[in-house]
Amino acid sequence: MKDIKKIVALTGAGISAESGITTFRDSGGMWEQYDVMEVASIDGWHKNPQLMLRFYNDRRKQLDEVEPNAAHRILAELETDFDVTIVTQNVDNLHERGGSTNVIHLHGELTKARSSSDPNMIIDVGSSPIEWGEKAPDGTQLRPHIVWFGEAVPLIATAAKAVSTADILLIIGTSLNVYPAAGLVGYADRNASIYLIDPNEVTSNMGRKITIIREKATAGMEKLKKILLES
Image: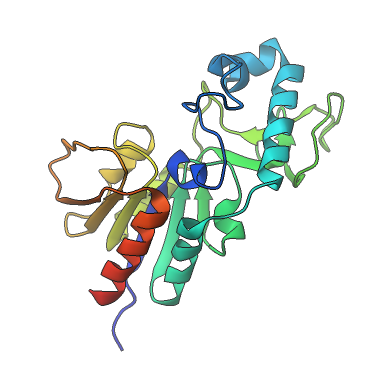
């Protein structure tokens, strides 16, 4: 019986964009009316927590209205033939809803809330809003379970360890210029096969052989699934 190869997939905004999740860069999207530091930084939380709560309540409502796409589902299907770990920069739950069972959320999870003082006191809120004055069990204001600018990324070491064990590394919907994901690629074994799915031209200065599939996430994953299953 041959060993099951380990796939680690680094995913970013591009994989959820095809489900209708707006990103920082989308014109006319949810982010456009805000300065990103007002709604995605710890300083913004200290300055205007009510604004932050409203913003993430809106994002949670939006998430409840969209569905996983083919790229999410194909990653889940690969678990039949591979040991698959997802390391995502996304805070949505589309990987889980698409069927993936091992997901590391670098930047937190939109469907969870936590204590303002204890980052380990986390509760599930689903699509429900977090209200101003709503308390965590320790009596502090509940806040979104999101890693904001100005905060440490607590799961980065866990993600780096996962990447270091990969036989096959996939980069989907995130560029090689976005950290911390860009730094994670450096932890890959020298013998690991690396595939990047991106519709745009990508230039890598990492000194690694990277197979680039110039497609959006859904079409790219269809092609990559065939490559992986035939290799």
